[in-house]
Length: 177
Image 1 (cartoon, rainbow, N blue to C red):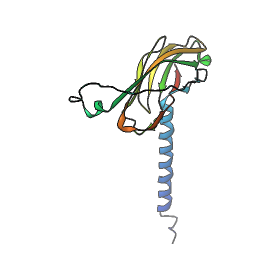
Image 2: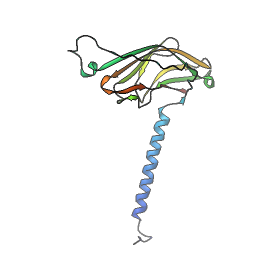
Image 3: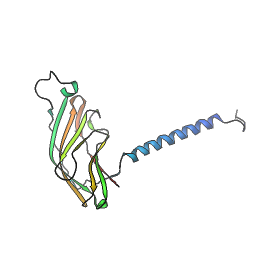
Image 4: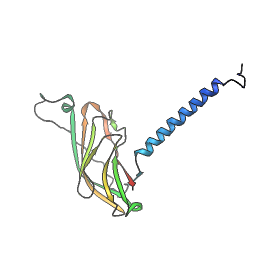
């Protein structure tokens, strides 16, 4: 039996709520991507290398006073990583450049106990980032069509979450202001 024209149709109301819910979820998902950052910078000019990472235990000696996290911490340092960012479209403009990591890291089953930190030789700032996040590298006027930096990366992971060969590619974003 169909409701009369004078009575609200409960199916119509439910459908409206579902459509609104889908719209809100879609808006929030799109909004989070937009709030996440700017435009991806092309780093394809960088030398394409696979770096052989050799982990060592971060803490040597007596394990008596270590926490569980400290006990399982592995560390590796890779020096001399050249990064070339194509910034030609932003030359002469004020900008912030960020480095980020994907949320999921191949070969690793956690996002919590994974830390990539770095030092630099030129114009970018030192810092650190975890999967699913980004960190500020540069804040100022873009001075050239290609920004070049030499990084020394240090990777710290919890050995309990290793489940294969770790593979990831940092991404670089730019926001002008």
